[in-house]
Amino acid sequence: MSRERLKVLVLADSRAFHTARYVGELRRQGCQVVLASMERGSVLHYQLKSRGPIRSLWYTMAATELRSLIKRFQPDVINPHFVSGYGFMAALAQARRFAPVVTTLWGSDVLLVPQKSMFHKRKTAFALNQSDFVLGDSEYLLAAAEKLSPLKGSKVIYWGIEERFLAHHRNSYALGHPLKIIVPRQHEKVYNNEFIVQALSPLIVDGKVQITFPSFGGMAGHFRLISKGLVGDSIQFYDKLPRASFLKFMAGHDVYLSSAISDSSPVSLIEAMALGLIPVAADIPGVREWLNKDTGFPYELYNRRQLYDTIALLVESGNNCEAMRRQNLVHVRTVALFEKNVADTIAVMQKLVQEQQR
Image 1 (cartoon, helix red, strand yellow):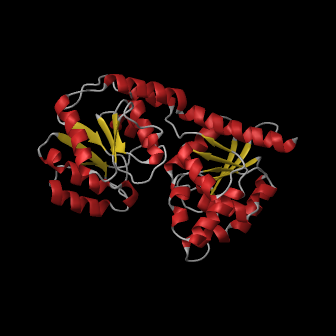
Image 2 (cartoon, one colour):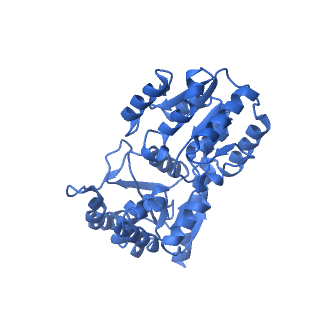
Image 3 (cartoon, rainbow, N blue to C red):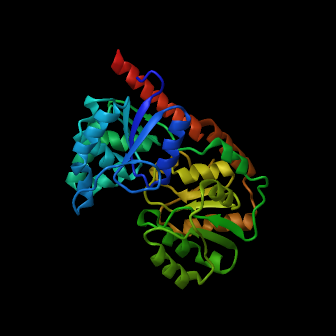
């Protein structure tokens, strides 16, 4: 290990918000970090060359360039994010020959990608096999990875919320009239946002709930057309905001709602609990480690009646679930503070480096 500080080569999508805050926190906690990326994001990074018209082959073609970067930077740890992409690239580059490889799972890389084809399944398994340690944000996610390839080492570390944003936790648990609901999942097929409007359209049209969605995502235009046909102009939208502004905005709502069909300890759910919202989400395996009848309101995936009844009960009963919301804050503070989560990640890296140097 470097005498002064841990040198970490992070391989990740430089456009992704979570990449920027992760790299920033590693540096804040004393690590020397180089971020390498195929994508052209705004966060400072080493730009890996994109070769050829087929995007899925870029990671294969960049392996030689990555190996050269590793030799120049001489990192203590190599940290690919998204195992079926950057993890596969690191495996092809034989990164383990130079430093321990700690792979960070992002969810869909082991839950969805391996289902695309046998090739996708095998390359994901190969990347896991070539990892010295695997980090995931739920037991469910690590179990899915283990089914693809035996893991040499693994640990659950959440993607939590920064401690300073706990100041936005609601001062009052009184429910709004109408009930204010936020769905902070962008418009993509996996997040199933159209289903929410279909299920809750009577409550929306009657003005009993005010529901807010993001304005962005690959299916945003389609969503606007469908929702307008169902509820007219009753849907609220928000544009992308700086993180502090968004969390303050989110805290102004009563209910967090998600109908994702695949997920793993979603960051937005943890944030909602930290901010004091009432969580309502489809009951899927990755979510269950956070959401149950004691912490919120899970409902059966694709069950419109159950989702309608859940929200209608909150509207009609006036139950503000104060005890539950206070306990959710305690739970987040205990296990899902972002600074502590990154410190735990650094500890895993340091231990691997020390073991290698013995």
